[in-house]
Length: 264
Image (cartoon, rainbow, N blue to C red; front, side, top):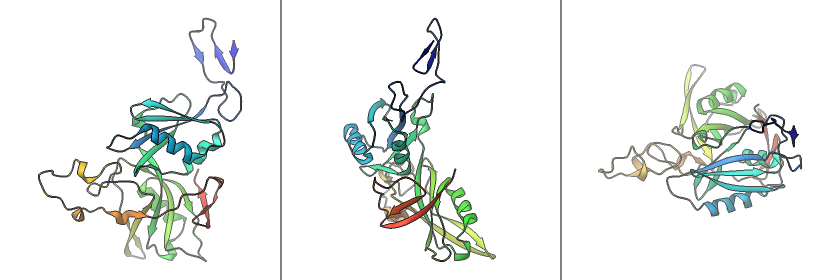
């Protein structure tokens, strides 16, 4: 028997959830389009304030609800899939200086803290020679950082002082300062800066805690943050896009039209 897209056996003990309709159809039987999120912080957060800030920031065109899933997880349900796409494109998300990790829930997946370990960051690769500002260099640099999501198209007629990449980064690993490359037999160092970088540890370079709670810091010794190998020099300024801008290949950032190529 078919009930609203779900096939039910006669004894009603088994459900085959293959023939279903997902968000955006406007039908009552539609499955919601969901995201799971978790605040990456060693401090307790005000869940109600977090939900309020997220919903006001998203300004969804369709219905949007949030639910406390336990284990410090929040599940957001969207009526329209375009609203979820916009939220994913706006990464990284912050709350009270901490990184708010998000991940789409697909089909039968159950929300779990273990699946939330990556976030998309815009990374600037500086001091790259003009002759190296090409797709090959982009792929090499992104491969050292994580998984390439998108990149700002290099323009040889109007070169920038850096290459700008959007990379999915494993936040359980230390941030990278930069990368050594060889060009015409010469060794060059390419420093990185991260846009919208949240709180991270100046001792170990991992996002989600400060050096005062880092397990690598000896509590019996007097510590001077200036002695750490990480610092605020990894941060790059960024202005978040307005909600009215459609999430396509061409964006507007800081008043300037920016052409991105989305990697599929």
